[in-house]
Length: 483
Image 1 (cartoon, rainbow, N blue to C red):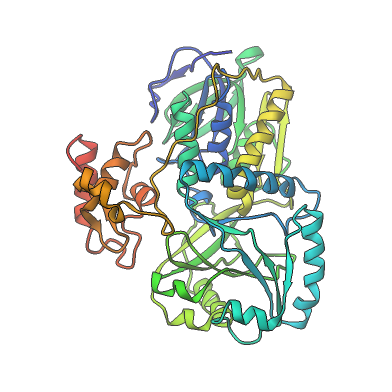
Image 2 (cartoon, helix red, strand yellow):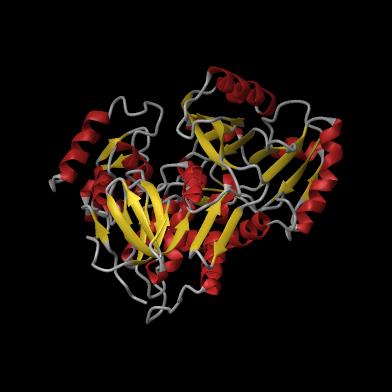
């Protein structure tokens, strides 16, 4: 089936003008999970639409997380989450290497601070084995302090999880969406779904949106924090999203030598707790808090939340509190009343619901996409592979600290001096990188989008010195002028 896309009311996409006909599949939600599903479906002879209410890819839960590539060692054994995190993390490691997504295998230390926490370590080791991860090993107190000399006093023992890693949560969904768009998926941003009705027969669903009417044969709900709202439009009722706010503190790059590994707490039944972790951008992250709230748009930080984080950080790495804070932010996790992912495919309604993904969705994204597409095929979605070999992942601009950035590359600068003209001095972002981002298949719509593509204005001055210059480059790029 190679049907096009029927759109009324003047919808416009970021990738191409809509085509006559009807979409085979519409995916609601262009976060990391929705983008991964679109990428997976783009390999088949299908007319697909990926839409989102926001003006860019990955602007919801995806952009504001702890940016850890999990092994799944501490997931609930035999859960769907456990299976898909394990599968997804393996797929994402390979994909990241091909696409140039920053990943660093720092390993993690899960630290016990009390006798009760120390007594829980063997059970965590056993849970890891049940989840198919056997590399967890105990670390004695003396060895723990040799490995993390800045650790606060009072730690009793730890478990090492050597394959836990840090990665870039911004480049990942951009890579998925770029690959999908280049394969023909129609990306519609700034498009909020306001209603869904059944058209009957092969015509599937009619979506009322903020920009017109859209028809499709199959519908995938990957709407994150709004997935229960979309599900209710299709009769739903199996889950309710209760946003869980997590506040985080980002410390300056001068704090990076204080931490060698991801430092995890012993989790409780309610939360995984506050961690300290390096980032691929060279900073140190402290967080998150865990607070259930009612408003899915409330991403404000609070005095109480940040104070609680500082108290926790003072125990874990006391010297961290002497370092400069670069930024604070809050993300919302799409928690439900269920402990596991809520993924279901309904053959009769031609509908897939992908909800309750929470904080492990980044790690599990490719595993989730693989699972959903397999279920859609079993439910009757015709999956005929396109002719030729599957395309290679797009090579994304590298914005991590572990590899070579453009300002460090003498040969690249010699070939194009724009890569030697630094615009954002805190993050060493050049005018060449900004120009490339503005000319990319998924160009940024605003400064925040440019930030996620280049790290511009992400440093200690937060754009104080470079904001005017960058705004000018952004405006010139939109008008087709030189960046």
